[in-house]
Image: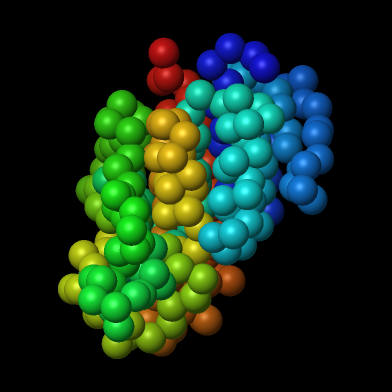
Length: 234
């Protein structure tokens, strides 16, 4: 392992393509069907990979990054659906914390989102990485970023009713399908993390229209954020 190796990960090809194009001295390793690209990005030792869609894929990928590549921090980037009505397509959400919205054991008396018999169900992002991300978003997208709760679930949300529910009941700022599982694995291993999401849709009835059209734009915004953060890492 190289010292202070950083993991930069996304769920889809669009979310890591620009990172791979900007890396030097790239080597590839395959584990559990996932290709891990190690190399140099703006003078920093990094591992870049695509998790695949969904919480299981993201959790497996994150544990491999920790066990095999011994990364010291994880930055997860990509697209998400906006839950906060003030967010527009292309805006940025920096995770304050992460939670699984599809963890639902309410028939047994647990609040929605609570993982039964576990001490932690809401996973806090690393303050230093959050500070770097917020500073970056202020520089690149002034007035177009929020610091809030990222909700994750194995569902593509495309319903105004569900959007309202997730925003009001679980205080979600945006919703996607991987961040909270990355956060949970990082928390269990005491690895600093931050989730950065660019809004590709409003997570309402128009999601199927917006997603494909704006994924490229949102991925570019995410890349600019990652690039700026890495440049400013000590």
